[in-house]
Structures are given as C-alpha cells and as structure tokens.
Image 1 (cartoon, rainbow over the protein chains, first blue to last red):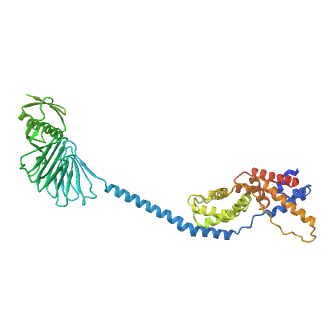
Image 2 (cartoon, helix red, strand yellow):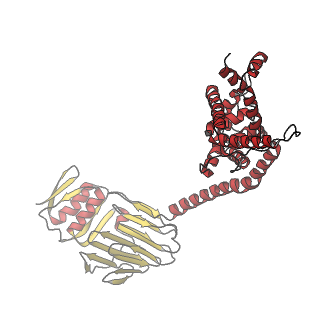
Image 3 (cartoon, rainbow over the protein chains, first blue to last red):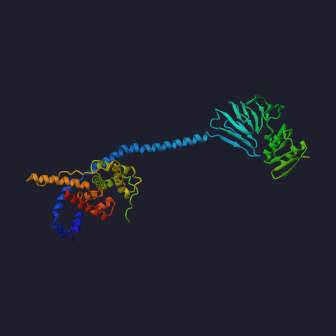
Length: 298
Length: 171
C-alpha cells in the first residue's frame, strides 16, 4: 500500500489496524499528527441544539404567526370584498337598455311601476339604480309612457326633452321627425327653440326642424298600441318609413313626392290590406318581391 | 412497503426532528464556509424559520437542500467576498510542564502559518476539509451534506491537505 492511499484512508477514518501500523511508519506521520492536533483549534463553536430550536420556535410563534399569517388572510378577505363590491356596484349602476327590432313590440315596467310600451325599431335606456332620485330615460324611436305619480319624469331625445309629473303620453322621434302627444295630465316639451306645455289631446310635432300645428287628438292612447298606425296630414315619406318599420320591408317610391301629406291609417297585422290602405288614397300601384316593395303611379 | 415520506412538514414534531438532524451540519457548513463574522448560528436559525414559513410547499426529502440553499443565499447576500479567516482558538496544552520559550514561539508561529494557509484554501476545499478533520466526518457523510459525489469530496480533502502542508512549509 502506497503512501498516498494510506493518507487518504487515514483522512476517511478508514484505516484497519495493519494499515494503521503502516501509516505510523510514514516519515510524515508526526507532521500530520501535529497538523491534525492544531486543526482542532478551528472547531466551530459547540451548538446547543435544543436552545437553538427553542429560539427558532419563539421566532416562528411570535412574529410570524401573528403578523405574517394573519395579514395575508385579512388582505385576501379584503380583496374578495372589494372585488364583490366592485362587481355589485358596476352591475347595478349600469344602464338598462331595452330595444325592439322591426315589427316587434315590447311592454316594460320601470322601477317605480311606470309603464312603457315600445314600438318597433326603438331603443330605451335608463338607469335602474338611481331611478328614485332621477326619473329620466333616453329614447330613440317611439314609445308610449304611462307614468306613475311622483317626481319629475324626463324623456330625453335627440330633439328635446319631455318632462312630466304623472301622465300618459307618446313620444315619437324618427330621423327628422319628432312628435309628442299627451293623453292625460300635463306634459312639457322643450327643444332648443321651443318650449310648450301640452294638455290632454295636444300634439307637439316637429318635422325637418319646423313646428307644425295639429288638431286635437281624440283617442285616449296612441293607435299603434292597438297595432294600427294613424296619420293626420303627415308627409308621405314618414308614413312609408313607419310602414317599413312595422313590416320589416323596404319600400321604393322613386318618382313619388314624399312630402305630400297623407291622412289615414294602416294595420300592423296584414301587409296586403296595409299596402292598399296607404296606396289607394294616393292612387298608387305596388309590386312586391321578397322584402322589397315598389310603388308606382297608376 | 416503506412508510411514504410526508409531502409537507408543517407538523411541529416532524419539524423539530428535521431541526435536530440538520441544524449542526448546517451550522458547521456555514461556519467553515463563511467564518464567524456573519453569525452562522443566526443564519442557520433564520433558514429554519423560512423553512417553517414554506412548510406547506417543501416536501420532507427536499427540506435539507432547501435549508442549505436558503442559508447559503442569505450569507451570500451579506457576504462581500472578503477573505474568510478562521480564528484559531488556544487548545489547552496537555502538559504544562517544561515551558520552553523557544518552543512556545515555534508553536505560535505554526498557528499563524496554519491560519493563513487555511485562509488560502478555496471555499470548497476548506468546508470539506474542516468538516472531515475537525468534525470527524467521513467522506460519504460530507458528500451527502454538500450534495456532491464521494470522489469529489475525497479530491477536495486530499487537495486541501497537500496545499496546506505545502503552504506551511513555504511560509
């Protein structure tokens, strides 16, 4: 056995008695022993394991249990609450929107039991969350309102606002056409130019920006609620536009004067009869292919 | 069938037994590697506190490497790579008779040389060598603690011994 492997075995505390004898015969044995003895002076301080463990437990239990474990839990709870509240707040403060497609009607009740009937191709937007404070909604299209008594009730349209206290009225806003009819109570209509108070039977009508005086209305509710559109001296193109909305068709009337006034009505439930109702008085003929209707002079 | 190892160590008893098993080795490792300036006992204890905080995430068989890695990193964060000088403490002489002043001087010089020579060892050599010589650990035990092969431990220790003797002779 050579010197190097003896020393290695000695290092690994792995010498058998014979090898130990051989190791002792090595010339550097004394040297190694002296080194080994002196090395003991570098020994790490003795560690009191139990005391040390106690101190670890102390640290864990004092600082970490209280602040470090409670805090994340609390902040988790807080975060969940914030998210829940946020979602609640966000969803309840969102505007409610109701809309109708062509040849569709909708009846809805507002948070204060006011009723709204929505005619075809119309959109109504209101905020249910603060309805008690602010009874206002915006309308595009035509709707009939039966307003429960209470605070000011406002319908906002592109042309102006309609304000009431408790009443029944119809608002129709289409392109350049704005019509408000009061059926019960008192209604105030205000546009940028005109402000007018309507009594039952009064109609406020603006076409192409011009105010048009109209006769007293005798009906107690708008005729469209009974699935019938009625017109009194209304430009023919408005009649056609209403017809298109009620039957979801498109009507072409190229060489016919759309601004001539029309008085009459058409039903919403039979397109043939309805077409006759709007063409015969003006002595027009119609042809129908799919959803396109062409009107011609006779 | 052997009892399956726990996949977490969040039990006080299990944790305590892990402490008893590894605290001394971890402390020695830190001391021989970084010296006493950075308080190896504190770092060892901090590593165990960290282990408890993460007890749900650390499976039992990973506890040792978690401890050593954590403590080592904590040390490295503070350690500015200055040279580690381990202090030689006076060992009580076995025989206090015949105090020869020249002998005492020689002893003193030898110790100084030894201190310097140990400081000149590489970190890896010093840790393995002192664990072997001072703590009396066998190659295999050191290999387990350091997570390296027995052969590598043997190389480090033998290398350290050679370098040490060479240095002492030269100085």
